[in-house]
Picture (cartoon, rainbow, N blue to C red):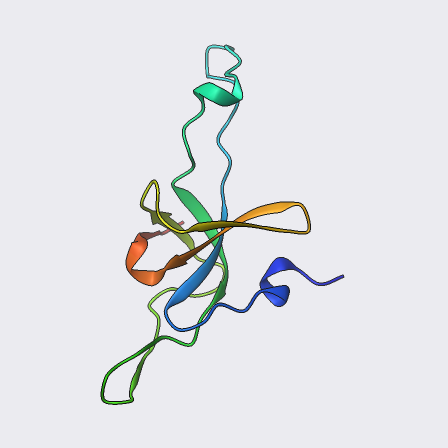
Length: 101
């Protein structure tokens, strides 16, 4: 069975990210309804495009790699659904940083 990263190939400077879901129960045991949850701002990179094409024809290599955990802007990217899995395609410029583990 193929993964979403194998089914969707981002173009140019775009990145395919699987958002990390937050806990639906607080530390004190309160269950949060879906309406109270914030949109995830962290995710796992599943696929990366070849990089941005400059006016002179050169391609800039992406700074993120498959498997990186990244932070991104709250309302950035385009939501897509692949095999009942919610994913985001966003520009590399929307990625604010890589979370070092």
